[in-house]
Image 1: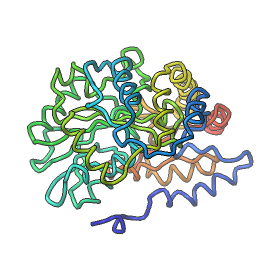
Image 2 (image 1 turned 135 degrees about the vertical axis):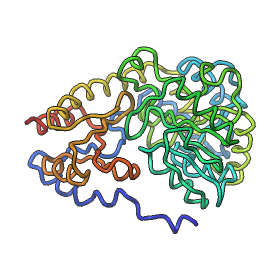
Image 3 (image 1 turned 180 degrees about the vertical axis):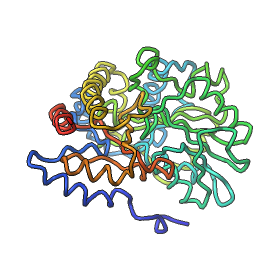
Image 4 (image 1 turned 45 degrees about the vertical axis):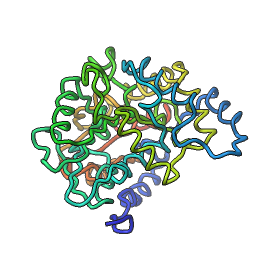
Length: 367
């Protein structure tokens, strides 16, 4: 199995519906892919510009300043004390890490990679890339004995599911019993909407309430794409078991997987500035408050979606039928078929559109 054996890129199938949506007299409202539309914070852009004299190779492990910023961020924003620079590692965005983690961990044929039932497709891509079995399951008791990597995702993409500390602890316990690495994709953690996550915050898998003082076999993965509008920078990082981090660092050095030096400087500044994160969260909260009731009124049922960047909804028919109906309203969404086989009647609405476009979608959805 290799890259050439992967299926066609699924989003290509949406192109005809995008064309239908563009024919709407007032233009398309693209709620399909969660790509940020708001400006990169000035403080971050200025840091990038000031670091453009990047004549030397960057450090795969990250600059000391960046690693300290990641450590401080986990303490301040995620309730995870006691990390050191040896516990953290920057990555070139989070998608390459998700896709390459099975390879970097030495997983192969005969092994299993577990991921959520409603799942970001790249978890499965990473398993298929190395010839491992991809297993979709949210129940730790179902995870097979040959599991070597477990992906959990909270808040989830596409379903917005948030895992409690008890659920996280159950996942960690089972993964350790199997001898598997557990990687928690927490890229939307600043976006908890429903109680209790709107006030207590979304818990991290590295929280002492989950792992105590033992980080063995556990990783947290995070991205600045959403909270800081840095998708174009490819700015992400991981933290956790220092022995696993060291293994990943060695492999990444061999493969040349190093974030550019100006991006490392921009990440350092972004991680130290909470004001722009609060401002961006407020934007998404405002858009969600407009879009969610409109989706409800249009005959959809919104499921889960207590956190994250998406609304996961169904009107009780095949997702492609819903995609087509919405395209005729000039609204483009993602079909549930892209996120596994378990939710063929769901569609994903993204909050990544301007206030004006979100308002336009709400108006078009009105009965």
